[in-house]
Image (cartoon, rainbow, N blue to C red; front, side, top):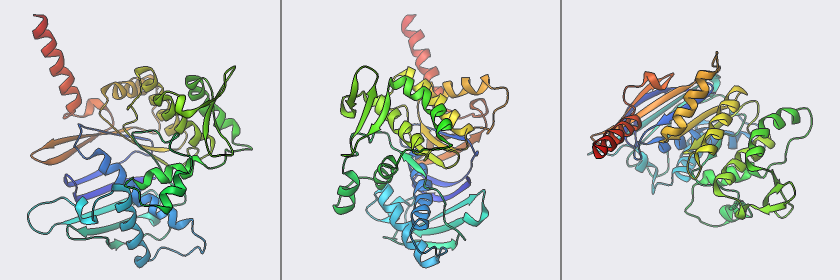
Length: 350
């Protein structure tokens, strides 16, 4: 579980320290505020560690190995021309410094790189162990229709696509769980399968289908895009990737979803958090925020607690405000825009 993420000179951030909840963490802000950069950077660091930890041999992290895999993963996930391009750019040479602390202190790490760095980082704190479970990154688009042969093509050809897509496709292709945990999986899947009116199937040819009662199998390409995004979550729960523990990074989950499905997404997020999944969401949907608040207030005790992060851009620099509720945030730009829209509407009516 990621506890804190300390930043100096990353992208549009001059300096910030984010304190996370073990449950749901929501990053709020307009486009260009660096929400996706935060998610992708944290994801890349955790994913690089998990990938190396799964390799045979069982060696502990070494400075030489980790410096290379961190730099490679950051480049492949964020897709800059060189690593130094994701550092905050000002006149002269600047240094980006990143530090991560976890519930298990043996995972803590810190490193830095400069604006002139091409493909290397310098570790200042070396973790003692590897991440034991791969994090999940869900992009703004769905990947179910992209899945067939995508991993093979990505690994054998140059594609100008984020490596997180490949990572997620690998997780989507894992085998569905069988045994004692099937009951818990069924409970989490029930609202998703009701919304999709069917179950997600993966055939022997590597294609996903939606199995609907009385309609047979429907190709994912014929299913509405919003439902395909829910199908990704459904599949990751069925394989055990999003069960019991782990981390989910979700970039703009509201994209391509109607309000009814956004409400379901909010319910699924809270349900996953209650079942031990740490969730990081980047959004600029006021509807999703309000739905999360409604669901939170309906619970007499909120565990684990939620955390909200309001990102505000001014003079080409982003500031971060943090709180355990939307009411605690003073700089919620999205709410300001909605109020301004209401004022304009009243002026027109007058």
